[in-house]
Amino acid sequence: MHILVTGGAGYIGSHTVQELLRAGYRVTVLDNLSRGHMAVAQVLDGAEFVWGDIADRELVVGLVRSRGIQAVLHFAALSLVGESMAEPSLYYHNNVVKGLSLLEAVREAEVPYFIFSSTAAVYGEPVQVPIEEDHPLAPTNPYGATKLAFEEALRWYGAAYGIKYVSLRYFNASGADPEGGLGEDHQPETHLIPLVLQAALGLRPEVTVFGTDYPTPDGTCIRDYIHVTDLAEAHVLALRALEGGLVSGAYNLGNERGYSVREVVEVARRVTGRDFPVVEGARRPGDPAVLVASSRRIREELGWRPRYGDLETIVRTAWEWHRRHPEGYEGGT
Ligand code: UDP
Image (cartoon, rainbow, N blue to C red; front, side, top):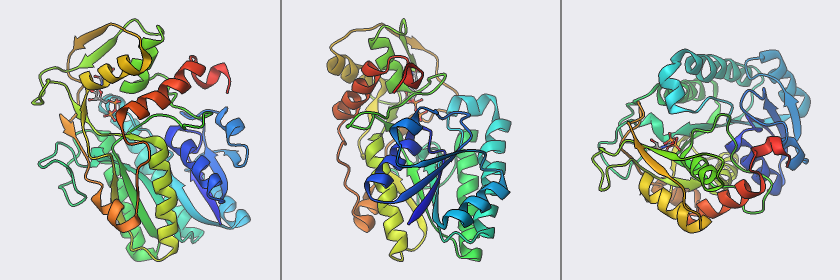
């Protein structure tokens, strides 16, 4: 079976391409390299890389028809809460307008299966933790709002046009492929774990904790960190389940355990054996205080079992990649 992976040169997309190749799928990546990395193509040399845009409907339809593509895994999107608060127009354009154009191409080319990279940000400030999939959907930032808008479009397209889909709502993707090669590299970096590791490497003078007055035990935000390889494996499971007749729907992906920003810093100090300065700063607009998943549905219905669930393992695999790639992919694979 041949799969089209949009955004396959990005962080979660590239790890998923790796797992698809390991599972024996043929893969074509479509990426405009606005956020992804060309160097990823060297690591994933079993996949075909096409430099292009998801909004190029003719290109997408042509790829689907010429390669006999049976499923689209859609990762190509902007994903930063802070940036989305400052530039909502960027998020609506990339995640909704371009996303809908991709969906039109999928409809036109009659692709039967679709897997969407969604996010815990669709829930907003939780009214109940751990968060189950039927929790109210009330995003607190444009990132979450645009992901929710696409999820809803997918639901209606699925019902009307027969596209079988799964939306996977990721909590905090982190870590790196334990077998090396792929890692997390955003320019500029805004995610907590890579920032902390860059500080441990001496590449940053300090780490700033965004808010110490949240209603949490130590006052800092709590997140559910999930290893990117466990996330990637969930896509393969979801794809197989769709092929086997799974009813379309949404699934959370998290480890069902929350860590505060201060706890992440402590684990990073332990794993790296290095100390680094940490300063206290203001809250980051749009951040909910606590996001912790219930992943019961995907465990029970699809048999998902995370292999790298504990935070030490997550941070250790990330640290191994960062140590070998202090300048990210630009320093070479
Ligand atoms: N965070 C922080 N300092 C930073 C970056 C992030 O305190 O320099 C916090 C952020 O407020 C959030 C958590 O770390 O509570 C995880 O943030 P990240 O950007 O990694 O992921 P997000 O939760 O936005 O998807």
